[in-house]
Image (tube, rainbow, N blue to C red):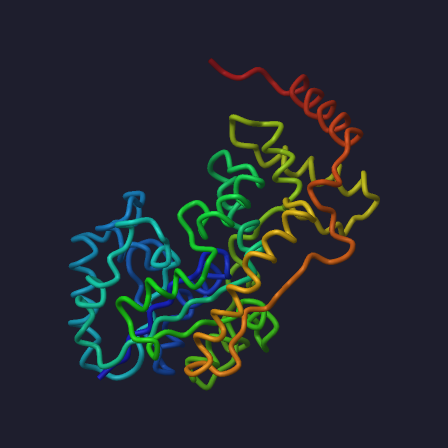
Length: 336
């Protein structure tokens, strides 16, 4: 009888890199006992929640999510090995977005269940979410994200109080069926996140055995403060890629550092987030101590030379606005 592993993200924890890599190397992984089903056009398995979530039609399975889940059980549950399903959409906190209980019932024919969830320090998680949103729409203002996180434990439909995420998981899965992984420990592991997952799954191969996709890093985000500055100038429109790149060039020149590290939050906002979520993260570790001894969420602070949002001054904005006007004046007129 096969085991089913449900990798539920969270968002911005190298999920796309893992999905792209496992999808590309599915045949090799199958030789080592891990089945990564190729479902539809996407490398991740987001279509498995299409029946419940408001996802683009691109992800819709031919006969719907329920039929796709039943088909997976029919095809693999009675066989050997481990079936690995991956979508960060499983971890959203929006009511009705995902019916984990229904998904569990549809996959109940498998011998055993494991839910794997990767977590990262809240301010870094929130910053990465901001950068992802900014690619497709006007993102929320960083102070608003901080207030939402502190007041509600979530931002843009995603949990940042990971105890609440665990509470929801434990309504469907037993604590022993849940595995929490620390993102920063995974990145530092041999072979990075891919290597950490291969080790956890006990496949007996390392990340170097897999052919990398996108140089081993998919869905890379731009410089945080460059994205923020470009979105401030472009709102209410989405900041175009050229404007984000120009903001990055100007920031490097302004701070005279070609390897500039930046953050969309102020130092005070970071302190407030750490004061709020540090105790909650330790509570999370205590909850898992009897099941995952040694698990803890890494407490990561910005490096000393990080340029924070509050350090951007009027001189930068004056130059950036001038560059923006110059670019617009030189651009060809829009058609129509």
